[in-house]
Image 1 (cartoon, rainbow over the protein chains, first blue to last red):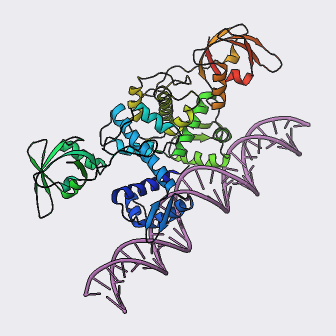
Image 2: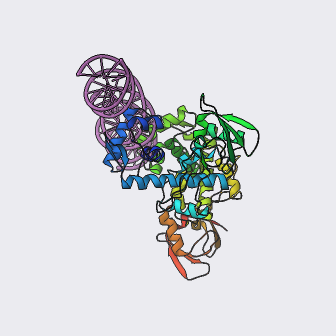
Image 3: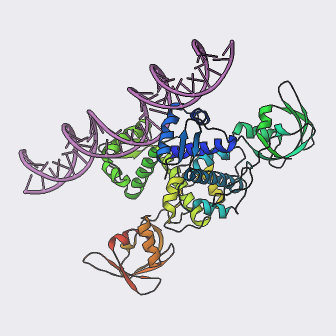
Length: 218
Length: 218
DNA sequence: ACGTTAAGTTAGTCTTGCCTAATTTTATTA
DNA sequence: TAATAAAATTAGGCAAGACTAACTTAACGT
């Protein structure tokens, strides 16, 4: 199988691919992983040799069918472990990502499937991301953010785009969870800040960045 | 905290210490890990610098109080994960060791305690080894083996000293489990083979090595 | 179109953790 | 006790995966 590093690169490329659908450049990968672009070039060569990705200066980095399969499995494991940590071990929303980051690399042919069964075949992880099934398919991924809502409109929080504990802890503080109802009261033209009402409560102002990190369903 | 390699050395030293109580030499560690003695010497230096072990040519390798604490935690995590894999995910006896070998290195301050609670604070792991408590204490460890039983005597299997899948699969084949009753019918003087009766069934002959790998309670 | 900046790449280095080969130290035994 | 065997150690090296510095290629604004 793959090394820890290879798996992290694969997952990163997969995420960038899902997020943007745009051309994936070495620099983008480097930024995403906090690595040096030179290191990324090394790994691109390695993963290309292993036929997990292809790289073309025009098209950028792309996952091969095998690379997609492997990356999907890593994501599947990550999200299943997150469900386990939250539901079974009682961790908080903001604590599970980093631990799942380690657990996802445990190698065993049947582990993910057994865990999936044990957890009752969940469709979404605690952050609202769909969990790939054993066959690679997965439920719909949400893409509309709070920043896309029209003034006066209401929506439901269905997922988060950012899983850092800084963001998640902020959500806890604001009492926002998966399923929370948010109404967009006003957009401030100056800096695109958003004035919102959470569950019909008093108005609060959040940044544009915040709005873009919260996935919603209208 | 420690690297994967450091943790594996710590655990190995801990095991050798528990097993024999004798002097722990670089060669013994090398054999146990399947590494070259030269590599062991490197790591001894590293762990000594980190104040986890002490090394004296006369006394051999010894764990410092901190080293004991850290090693105990690794063993705790390993055995708790084994219980989880067997009881919750339905793995077989002989499949869990290698997976737990990876899971034991997951680093999180509260993970072991949460898992312990989730599993109902088990005292022993599926191989009959006592699980260290959060405070480092643990239940009695059995030390008498089937090879110590007197001819005609009976005993109960309480643990295995060998956790390789070769041995465990052999046990499955013989229908021996934790709690199985075994009577020693005869010892063959020539090669110390043992003629036994498992749960009162027909006589079977096992090797001395086999007898020494099965921990029992009289 | 050309010069400047950004992106990508190459070359060389470092650390970790392992190795082999050679050497020194310790044990064993004739 | 000397000879030999075994164990421990040192020296040097290698692969993975990161880095910095330097160089090349691409992009972009005037």
